[in-house]
Length: 85
Length: 313
Image (cartoon, rainbow over all chains, first blue to last red; front, side, top):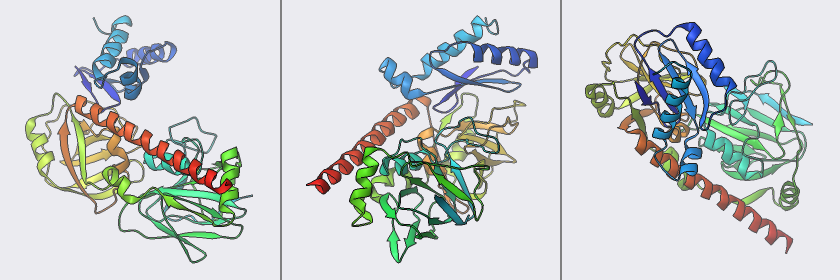
């Protein structure tokens, strides 16, 4: 499940514990690749949280509803890295 | 030359606007009240992300060792120096030997003092009595003009009035962005209860007392996110700036960034109420506040330029 975690973060959450090796791989992949709006990834054993700057997204897309765009980018990253299908 | 911290008060720390890589022995994790940090810097003509001194509950006593332009913002503390009342959100010039003390306030928690030209510290950024804060003296042309203007009268006759900031700070109502997996009953209790701050873990969390919240246990480890509303033993715990560890306390929502200025000014005994909103509403409010802050800073720049031009004529 993806949800808006306040106005600066979106979080992917699952009930099953995520393998620590997978968390490490995702964090490394995030830190070494370029992102349009995502600025940081914070991981726990059940969650992946992506931080972003909402005003930047709003101004780039002339919208006051940036959350969908950010979730799309986060989801795309997780699919690209083979974590989500 | 430097600022001498004669008495460090309850907790005084040299702080950055955003979290940034810190020299050894320092933790620059960002100002709790980002608006006050930026406002103080804006008033003295600094870049908004210059370091300030963040002082909590009982501010420090500061001695100046050379002519120094300062402004402070945040909680409603007033200061005294040479029998002169020193007000928040105004610009002052102090001279060598002057000592600035603050008078306790029943409202607010944190005050941010900015120094024209910037400051830095060596060693720990947590200030102790007797410490020195180094003045960087990165003066711009505007700073030079400000010094000239304040030479005759040590304060500017205008400032940002309290009523301008009322919308930001005065209310006890905090928005919480809802999660899709939390029951309406939890949100009903959250919205219908007036909570009281029972304690603060400095810069980490505010603990509230009030009607018990019955959040279903999820066995999820949640991230520590600034503004996060967690439930521990039926009581809400609100994450402040330095709450960055994972937690198994239930997460029921997150306070948007535009209410974090106000939250960081709550202290033990303060009242807190909640309104649960959707993310889209939070973003609309954030955008509105962002526009308001930009216009406030532009107004300060305009007023300052006008004053400097008047001085030259």
